[in-house]
Image 1: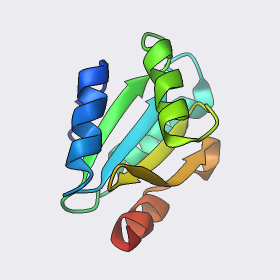
Image 2: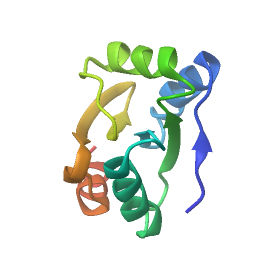
Image 3: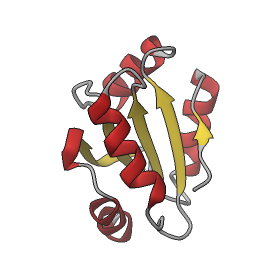
Length: 111
């Protein structure tokens, strides 16, 4: 799967704008956490929904941005965590081993 890396406020604003046309998925990941690694591998190896952008946010190196994402979308900060963003709003979030590509795909289709 091809990931975009979320590293700046400008990119977050781009993601929000793009969500008005195409669902955006943010995966908040910590490479220090084995649960995060397992969840990431499951998502990374799965077939992604068509016409959806996937963004990877490293919560260790980008902690302020990760907190900003939580605040902007009104979700508690978790890691690992996945958010589906449509029309500038978070329409779905899940964390830890509850993360699955099937749930992401279902939410993208409903969004």
